[in-house]
Length: 164
Image (tube, rainbow, N blue to C red; front, side, top):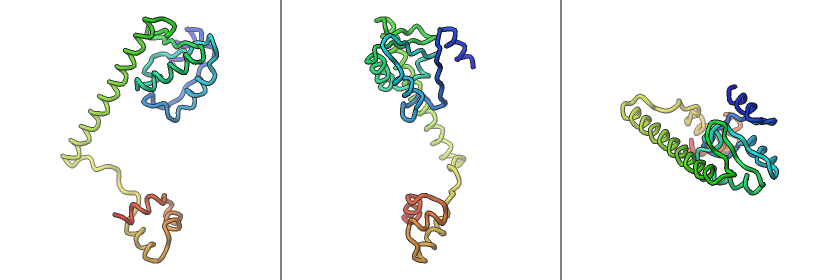
């Protein structure tokens, strides 16, 4: 991976990577580990800010955590160094643009889906649960948990099928 080479060239000894999206910090265990590992004087080095966070709120939370630990944040491909005023300013600007880009992509995706639905092209994935089977088992006197276990589905799916 070219990113690992850039991080090694920047002097990084310990490199952590995860495949989760930067659109949220939820479920990003490697990020959490890296932040917990930071000590005073350390530098959290990333290749690009949008790899770290695509939400200005999440980015600011990460920067606050880094700062609270006495560390700083730098990027190999962008002139960001949170130990300087100019670096902090540029960081905020990049964070805003990353969030803007994510929002634009989401809007375009939703527009495309709506357009495809209007043309009858997009219909979503095929149903994996047969509501008739669920209702038949319910009519036989089975409870929601038993139906879920029999059909290997979640109880919430059983309730949705019974409502529909």
